[in-house]
Image 1 (cartoon, one colour):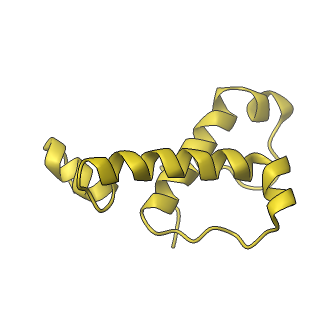
Image 2 (cartoon, rainbow, N blue to C red):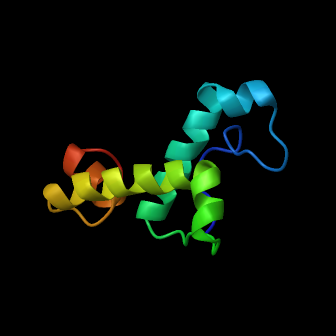
Length: 88
């Protein structure tokens, strides 16, 4: 599944230390989690690798988003946006 974030938000390759530790790194985690809730597959990595990197944060964030959507009877973020009156 292709990434859906605006091109100026897409991070590829090496990111700087300030980016990784600051707001940009947190935004990357949330974007990735939202995309996974909408069907983007998670990479196949081991549990230890996931726990030691941002993958654990992405999975936690995706789980929280999924729980929120489930609690409100929503399939994905498109349905949430449509219910909020936004473009689906």
